[in-house]
Image 1 (cartoon, rainbow, N blue to C red):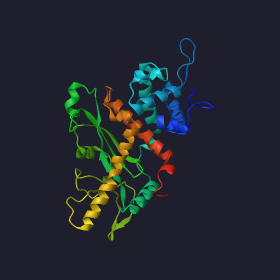
Image 2: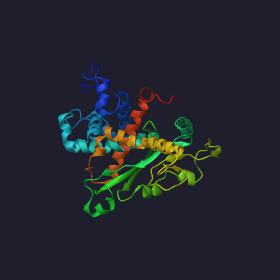
Image 3: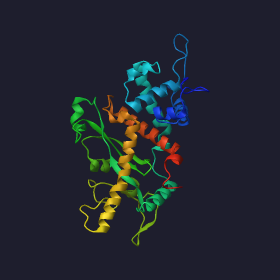
Image 4: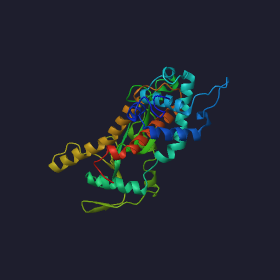
Length: 312
């Protein structure tokens, strides 16, 4: 506690942000939210009437496991927490974060968000663009042997597949979790809710113009594996003319937004780069959602200082 949470801490805010992936103010908000969501995080006396672990200690333990992929039994070296308590703290931390902050961060863009995204897309040469679409794989080390075939695809090991649409800031406007690793991007897209509002005619109304033609639906940039739908704009294979070459280069460059967002996420939360040691798919999905939420909170907190290419 004296390292960060006293009047004159040993380490600065910059050290805290680098080590725990969140600024101290955002971390304090997370602690308040999980304490309100789950009484497990409220400090209580133990059987000897000594103060138990505080919400800050339990949250720090969970974030260190997410950020570094550290085993639970390593938490006793820093936060003086037993392995079973560290694992319980991680699981309940993830559930509390998703329950208390999921509606705010795991949501579709509002009308105001759409207006900003469309303006930025137009400045980048893609009017009507919502973002870029792709999937990633997270390996499941402790997948039950009887299920391994269902979860093993091109990665040659059991994985689960999250799908996302990301913008140039790394903000993810669409998230779909939990598909088995045998599914490719097309199968995941068929199951996801990305275009449900469009098919149900509930999508926000937009208006933009390309080459003199008016359009009223947004689109995403995607790679060549996706189907040639009007709402998925892909590159041009083997472009011949200068015009087509220019479009292909621009599309392939802008489409990297989602790959960069996944890279940012994995660099901040190393647990996603290592085989997951949990025993349940539900627990993996909660960890994925928590990492996405914390990633988005950090982007929102630092938005004014990190991204200066497109002003509000």
